[in-house]
Length: 139
Image 1 (cartoon, rainbow, N blue to C red):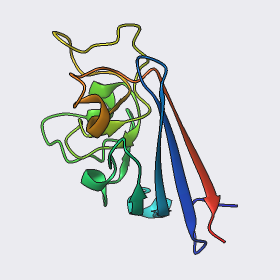
Image 2: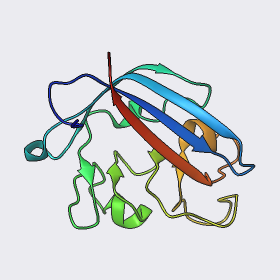
Image 3: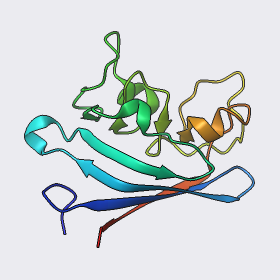
């Protein structure tokens, strides 16, 4: 099984909030492009889930890491700033590979933590306490 290729895949994301409540987001179609193109987030469609769509804003973005800046932020490197590799546009929409923060709220500090903006921003900028991404082939 490969995330990259002609096989249709589904993505389920489990988000654990500051109160340890789990939120589930599902994308019926999920596709990542090949390495030669920078592993772009090609498809994230068929969205469902009360936590909101945190991937729509970053569709088409390449996967950025500290040693390979491929984001849309021209003045810096989102993966270096946000402390984790991800498909960044201008850094803030979502980041499930960010640093775990012991504090629940981001008030007065930078936003360097696990976040899923449709959920975390609407709740006064709290950080997630955990996340899990599960991918499987569509039948």
